[in-house]
Image 1 (spheres, rainbow, N blue to C red):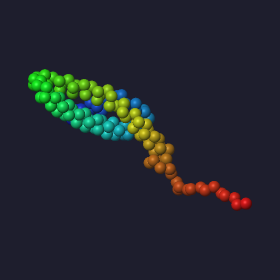
Image 2: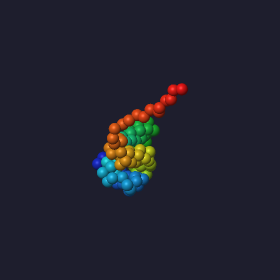
Image 3: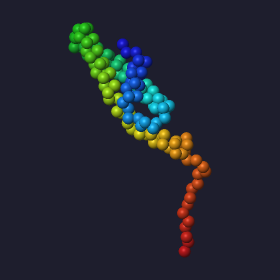
Image 4: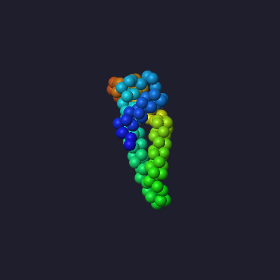
Length: 129
């Protein structure tokens, strides 16, 4: 059985080492980003982990596969899932990293994501002939 806290911790460690998060991100922003998406990844992996067991067990019962063979198949499929989670899930985050980078740049330039000072709309002057 996979411990959810251990899985999330392991995914967060992989993310911290391998995600292409720019070095200029503040440490807090980096930690929050990693924690949030490691948690989401762990939830997805655990959900699929359970589903694999159900699918393989159902298939094995219909195919009259022995209990030992079914257990081995479930374990093998789950190992593949965990390997994929550690190597592939992180690459789905590159667009989110780019978006967060843009947000952090805006905060650095404008302070809290919006321009400082009053907002003015300037209309062009129309000359009448």
